[in-house]
Image 1 (cartoon, one colour):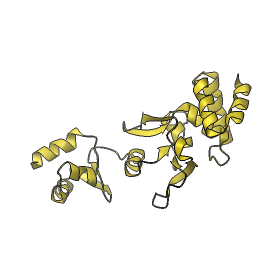
Image 2: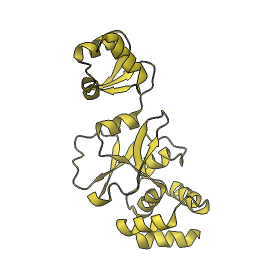
Image 3: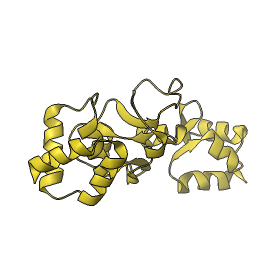
Image 4: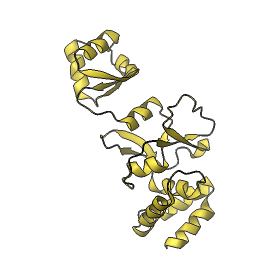
Length: 196
């Protein structure tokens, strides 16, 4: 691939690049350094480069580096545009037994049985237009209702629950199905009784 073809590739793609992906495209260290020196890309952190005309998208970058994390709780509410607060820490769900020692310190971990890890997983766009994995509203609702250690403020939980129940944003059959699988059916039914 010529240098002009490499520049074309850089400008035609999403703007966030990982060394591994660049090497897969045939762009070796020499060309990475040339792109850096020419100001076409900049180093965000080791192994991660940004095109010079885009903003960093930490949510996307984290999930590309650690594909087993799924955004949940506060971060999921943020991705669904159901909270005004931009998270300074990110809530992520991983399966029980997953080694989190190598993950960044700005993550709050929630652990789930491996068979339920992908239950309710969907893809949403970040504010910068990148796809990330999070949970649907039914899964978020189950997690919030059943969690004993959620860092979501009680006022925000009540506001969220009022909104999703009173505006009929939930599929009640799916919600109960998830609740059964997650072992929180009784708690979920109690909340449903309050709002219906």
